[in-house]
Structures are given as structure tokens and as C-alpha cells.
Length: 545
Image 1 (cartoon, rainbow, N blue to C red):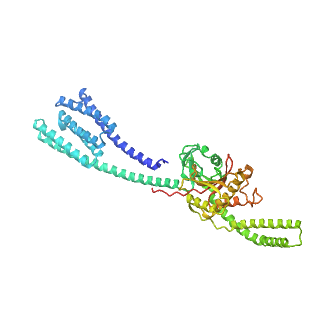
Image 2 (cartoon, rainbow, N blue to C red):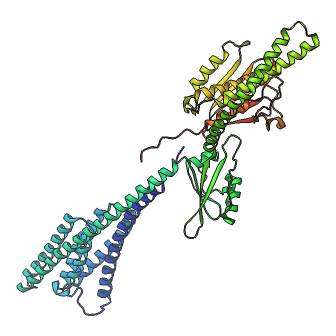
Image 3 (cartoon, one colour):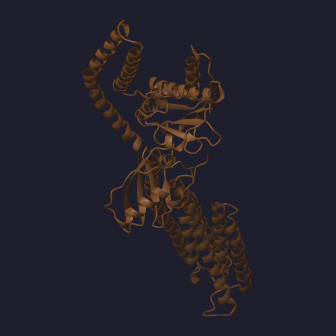
């Protein structure tokens, strides 16, 4: 299952791409400046605009140098957009071309007195900003050498006098000074970028941490916009809602009608009392909490709490109260019941009662034993120790359970076991899970024998494909359960059999709720009965950031 990269990582990648984009953009702007300089020199020269300075000494050399410079700036444009060759290579090529072309143009126009050396100073300064220290110093030295060489050549040709060497030296020193200033400025810029990058990385790390925490919270978290579309949903939320991942931008109405209805009511009346809502038969009830986000309150933050934890606490409190109640029952009812049963036994052994009276005594004994069984079951429930949940490997546990369950039973139960995946685990108290499964399997075998005269049973276990919750299904081959009976079968003392006490399924569900699990009946259209134990979601181990 692929996951979308965190927003912080996406922004970091975008920032890296943006920084590279602006670096190349600066180079494009520099080449645009070079193009305009070359084009401007050609226009001024060819149309004889202003003072006749450009190309004054050797017009043909100026024309050739200017057209060559203009052509090279044009040819650089596609290379910049293709970004080939690399950034540094292109900067070096531009700097070399500028030094040669501007030096030749300046020589053809009359030397330093034309002021064209300023163009070379601009080129050297820009190059120093675009490249690191070694290159900047090298280009300043190369430009200074070019100016001195040009002036020396003109001097030996009789075109310059000795005093103008001072101007050449000053211009060369200017190149070095401007290069040094540009390097200082570039260093300041880089330092500012490094500080900004460190702050950006720190913020990105904090954002990854926040997203990490949100994704691995046990509380469900959703964020929806004003139109009710899901903008963010964490792992716990889509597990609780029984959804596949990737539901961002879907309307909340398509995800959960009940939750969307509560959101609408809350937006109309934020003071309204929220109530738990049900997502599905095999999923726990959820308690929502709503909060507005942002100054314009266009976003709504929703927290979802699994009520099974609250139910577990309530169950423990209820059992504690039941324990105190049954202690009173033991004293107030069992003693008189024992006396009644003992009296019935004495009457049964008496030689003076007739056959009709003997039948009445049997009825008294039978129902006394039934009442005693009810009291024993209630006492067993009330005296149960708190659940000690632990990780259970379903494959090994169920195989061991079935081996023990088959012992001593005649006929031997025919139970088909299917576990997928084989390494599925669940959280439950082992002793209490054995008690629940024993009750479900005994009921299932009893109803299978009634229908097909064989003790047939199926047990399926694994992970629910919808919400990844561990489960165990116990399926029999009986007649099935009528809808009106299914609504009441988990109530205490409800039974359709004259022999049962009606506490088996009630106790099984109480045990499941005490372990943050659910016991549900799932109808089977083809016949038979399926009871599903949906375990609490397995806590995930947080991966390293």
C-alpha cells in the first residue's frame, strides 16, 4: 500500500526545485543583459547614433566583434533553457566571452578613454555573485590581464601614451575590488539562505513530527472544509469508519451519513449535545467532537473516540456492582433455596407420599436446581477477575483450543478452521476468550446437529479487509436465527430452549466488551448462523522519523 509523501517532504522538494529555478533564472537575466548590450552597441554603431565613439579606431574589427558577441548571446539562450551544459560551465563560458568581446570592442573604439571598461566591470561583478571565490578572483585577474594586454598592444602600436597605464591599473584594481565586494555580498546571501534553510528544515521536521503523531494517534482525526470534503484523515479514523485509505477530497456524506448529519447539526447549533453514532454492525460506536479551525472557520476538526474503551470501564463498574448484589443474593436466596431443595429431597425419600405427590416433588427439585444454576452463573460473572489483555497468535491459539475442545466429546465435532493471514494477532484475555469460544462452539454444534445430524462447525479468523481489525467467525449449519429473536438474543435470561438459562450469549458479549471487542450476529442468507468477535485494533509501532 503506497502512501502519499508528507506535505513537509513535498514542500522541501519543491523548495529545492524552486531554489534551482531561481538560480537559473538569474543566469537567464544576466544573458538578457548581455544580449541587450550587444544589440545596443550594434544599433548605435550601424545607425550612427550619438557621438561616434563605438568603432572609432577600427570600425571593421568593431563590427566583427559586436556581431560575434551578439550571435553568441543568442546561441546561449537555448542552452540556458535546456540547462546543458551545467550551470557553472555556462557561467564560465559567458565570462570568458565577455572578457574577450568587450576587450576587443574597447580596443576597436579607442581604449580606456571610451569608458567601455565599465561593461567589463559589470560582467566581472555579476560573475562573482554567480560563482564561488576561486572563479571570481580568476576572472578579475583575467579581466585585468586583458585590459593591460590591450593597452600594452596599443602602446607599442603608438596609439597610447605611457600615462594611460595608470588608468589601466586603476581599472584592474577596480575589477578586484568589485569582485571582492561581490564575494562578500554573495557570502552574506548564502549565509542568509543557510539560516532560512535551517529554519525551513526545522519547520519541516516539526511538521513531519506533527503529521507522524496525528497518523499514529489512537484518536480518529478528520478535517473537512466548508463543503464537507475531507481534507485530512488519519489511520485511526479510517480504521474506525471501516474505510480504505485515500478518501481525501471525498464528501463526508459518502463516507459516513451519520457523521455528516451530526456535523450539519453542530454547525447550526454548536451548543448541541453530540451523541455516539454507529458505523456498522462489526464496528464500535464512535463519539465525535467538533472544533472550528482558522479565523474564517472554513475548516472543521473532528475527533473520533472509540466508545468501546468507555464501555469497558462501564462494564467493569457494572460487574463490581453486580458482585456486591450477588453477595447479597447468596445469603438471601441460596440459603432458603437450599432448605427448600433439602426438604424436597426428604419428601422424595418418604414412603408416605403417593405417585401424584412424587411428581410434584420432582418438579420442586428440578426448578430448585435450575434456580441454583442461575445463581451460580451470576456469581461466576460477578467474581470474574478484571481482563488481562495480551497479544494472542490466532493460528496457534485456535489450533490448541480446538484440540482441547474435541477431547471427551461424543460424537467428535467436525470443525473446519481457516486463518488468513496465518500470522494474525489479537488482544484479549486468553482465559476469557476460551470461555467465549466454548460457549459459541457448543451452541453452534447443538444447532448443527438439529439441522444436519452432524456436529459441523466452521471457524474463520484473520484481518477484516475493510478496517484491518482482527476477527474470529464461528459459523454453524443450523436453521439460522429469526430477525425478531436476533434483536433479543444478547439480553440476559433470554432463551428459546427450555433447558438453557439464557445467559450464555449475554456473558459472552460482556466478556468481549470487557476486552474492548465486539460480539455481533451476522445473518447468512443461505442458512446457518455466524457470530463474529471483532477485536480491538492492534496498536501499531511508530516508525522512525
